[in-house]
Amino acid sequence: MQVRIYQLSKTAMQSGRALTKRWVVEFEPADAKRVEPLMGWTSSGDTRQQLRLYFESQAEAEAYARRKGLMYSVETPRERTVRPKAYGDNFRADKLLTWTH
Image (cartoon, rainbow, N blue to C red; front, side, top):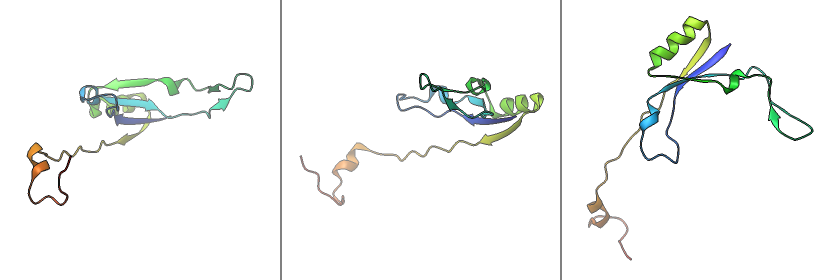
């Protein structure tokens, strides 16, 4: 059984990064999804696909996968780059485009 270990990213609705420190163990789908002909709903026989386990660190998540005998792949998060900006840069004299109203 294959699991994926990754760190949550912030959603578009979040302004802070509060819940992005946790690591998630998520099971890969073992069964293909299918469309039911009567209602048109998408379903699957694999219930582990709905399960998410949260851990405080990557080491804890990997230890859990090893303890349970699961094959796992770790997705390392991309580092966030923050470019410092200043309000006064909008009015610089050497700016390429002139500021107008």
